[in-house]
Image (cartoon, rainbow, N blue to C red):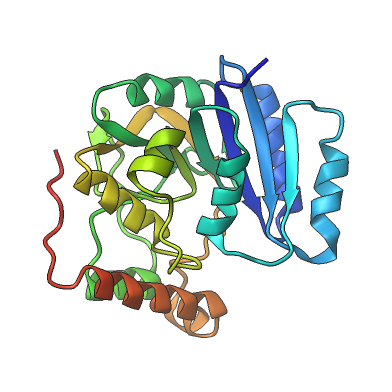
Length: 259
């Protein structure tokens, strides 16, 4: 049967997390026909083959192995090109879904002028993790990158947000490809999700966080480390480069209205 939801994850050295994500999907699948698409971004130690072997007995699971590391946005786009359904969910490998995650998101996505929906993120002990933000300023972004956590305010009702972290985004494939024209390829990693959500608002569509949809997120994040750890990491400098591209792209432009 033709799937109604395509769940896409990009792997780069996270094969065990992809397996855990798959197991959570088996335990709490959408109440629609669905497919699981893994894009291996040229991982070390042949993880693409490892995952293809792991998923070989499941007709709704597919593995795409790329010849080079294309980054977050382009990697996800390879999976979206392959996707057979109109509803797509971009889900990071370190996510594990809970009961009703996809069903609650789908309810809100059907609402008029909704472009992107995202769940609440939690730790295993039930604490909320930040995955939605206001549009960044240079100082605010640098501060969050260097000093990490902010106080997490958990939405009590479906709430419009400026942008949602790319760890879990659901939208229509046609909206992503035709209206947004995909991710901006100038970003290899970081800020591509901010940019995507900003363009969603500019297109007159909303980005919503849905509190009835919850997912577990791993506590090892690529951003938000302490200052000394950050300065030593390659990902910190990739984040800075993406920030420079973002602020240059939107220089002199007002933030879109959040409604």
